Length: 79
Length: 225
Image 1 (cartoon, each protein chain N blue to C red):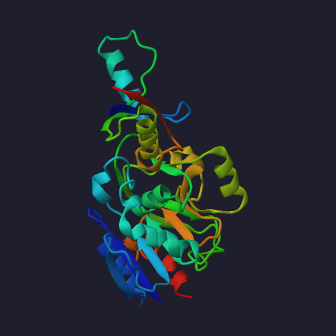
Image 2: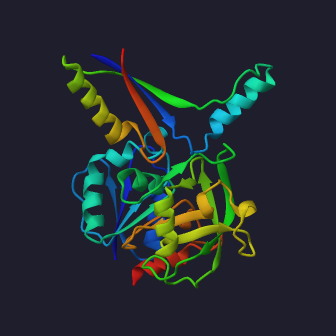
Image 3: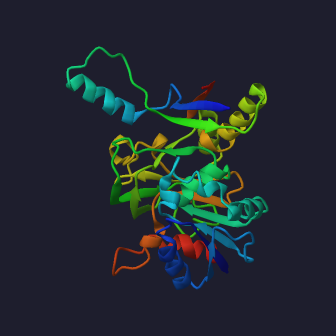
């Protein structure tokens, strides 16, 4: 079973990279954007048939290593 | 005094800190990260560098390495632990120190000599310095922008757990003297028992007038007694 995990900086954490990307797009004339937050994306395949159990396993991976909970939020979705 | 320097793939200040420790008469040993036992030591140093190429987050992979379980065990039983630069990042990833180090505010790798002020000289790491002493010291990092939650920041300020803050040469702590955007100009912090110190600046680079200055010497000599 495959999951995607998206990790982004929390709302109140400054994201200088996202800001630079945003400014560059605006400078390129693509100004129809409100904000950009840069993040990370993982695709994880779990050897487990039950979806709830599999998702729980991915959640443990996120909490233990993939995500720094002080500054990052994450979202798990089945793919 | 016996010291141990932990070496990860990508550590690059391990030798420098070993030279500094030996110069100060520490009996030092280097320990590879795959070891599962630590030699009996009074001080564990987690050195600077780019452990595991900074993959995932700076210090994240090293923070889960085999030897780290042992470091956590001895740290929790009171052993002195010093994390410098990437070592500080690793200690935050292990949870031994709270908070985290974000990318520098200006998005640039900064390598230069800056000034820091000793805020707390009542610790095993800093008692040879005078209170509010200003040190000229090297920083070399891309992720040195200290960040933590409001609750921890309050605890740091109230309990005197901030070891060093970035300042200018006159000692003024302000936005101009903050090289990387760190919260409240924080350059180094203790845990609540003050047996663990994490700092971004490199004291091991400041032990000899021939190549820099001696502003880092007192950190190591503080630890000797």
